[in-house]
Length: 428
Image 1: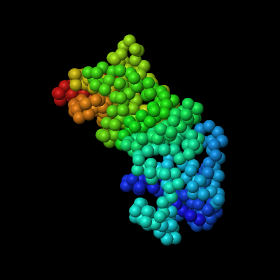
Image 2: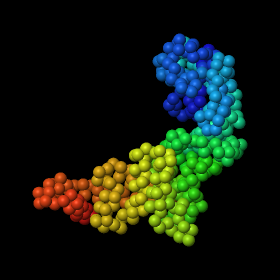
Image 3: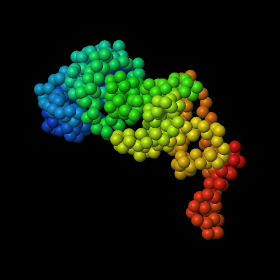
Image 4: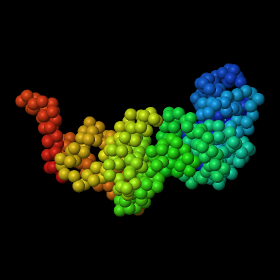
């Protein structure tokens, strides 16, 4: 039995980055042999086991054979005669197909963390196994597929795009990009299930440069299949006095990277991704103006949310941002009554924390423009001050007093609204 550390842990350690999770592959073993040593079997589709002490995943070396479209259509073969190189050959990219022998890391399966994540120790012990040139591609900052078997799993398109968002200075090798384009043209991307698309999309949005994920998906044609509503934003002009970058797609990339710079949460970043969908459906004779694009954005957003089965928290925040970002941008011009109506439409009184995230998404939109990344966004503090002032009124007292006079629920709501308006007026 031989044990190797593989995949992202090896890649990140070689790049000098923190390693979060370690994965292991076992060569020359059977499931029974691992169980006998205390490993816990957890794999459904292929043999994967949890280490009895570390709880890290150990998988038997395996090969895969394509049997049907999509990423579920595989026949897995795991046996003691499967070699390490055969296991590495089924992986996606060369930079993820580097292994390190565990035998150089410690005795009797006790792998000292300092040694296990020390590339200098690997080199000294001649422990690195790199049959496909992964180290060279790391040095040259290239994403390159290992073998033509890459085309058998459409999830790999998403993974490459996600990795591009993490390693923004890496490029996709021309032959790998061509392979991804062919996969899209052959319909492989159409077999991706909603849950997997959302999983990879969410991970990519949370990286430091989410714009790179969209660029890679566009370059290979996958964005047009997975998110056609987003893809059609490129080539759509906007007024240069508001958007010096002019192109709506270029603006979207700037907004996404601003959301990462401001360390926004996933719901905020998703709201940024979908805030301007309606601009892709603006009639040509109206361009470069986009009157009413907010409502069109909300309608298109609803379809995406249903298609990808997005979490409720993400749906609701994205809907508010899509509908109201224009009004929030113009809120500096609004008087007390209009400000309170805006707060009410955003449900800010019931969900003030979410309203803060709405404002952050709007700030990303405002600063995600060519030459405006350092501009202040006074609308945010002004609206938060207005919310604080409106929250200061004693709604319970107003309601109790009104009910004592026989007022209806509608009348009570109007009284509370008027009291909020006066509170905001006094604060301005």
